Length: 258
Image (cartoon, rainbow, N blue to C red; front, side):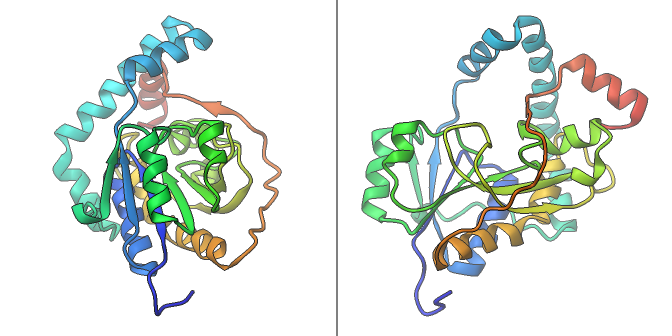
């Protein structure tokens, strides 16, 4: 890395405590990135899309778990801050002068911002799926941070599903190239770790972010340096969603996996 000049790195995200931790690690390594903050996708639109594939009974169960996660984050905000301190994860939001707000990562405003910045790397971390035409408009490498071991735990709550599946060795994260699928791009870096004492589905992402900072900065450094070399994980591929409320309660009560 050329330490004499800041690199033109863009991070695209909906935000969140664990994402700020990743962004601060990137800033420490390369200088402050530009953060493009998109508005969250409508939960109703997301759930309707899921219902077409899974049915409303499963989706209703997922809504119950989503409400538990959201409520836990509000009620235990102090505890989440404590976890961040315990794992040395700086979750300070980026400065406003380094943040650009757009309606969506697929909006004209997003593409106009990229045109102005002319980034060397675009790094996605907790944002919606890029459409084919959006991805085709970006000329630099586009990477994604995924809180799960891909492709085995694509989609939502990868850390939780590894634990719930009895696969603790794959409690981890992935940085991969972005294609038009859900976490299906070629894998660049992976990290594996262990959940912290007292972790739940509402806090796994913080723990995962803490042990994943290095793979994020390494992947970006590789993208800045030249051709990327994806790795073959040899893992099966499956997309996961939020657990249904009844499955979540069952695994919690019978196996202590919350």
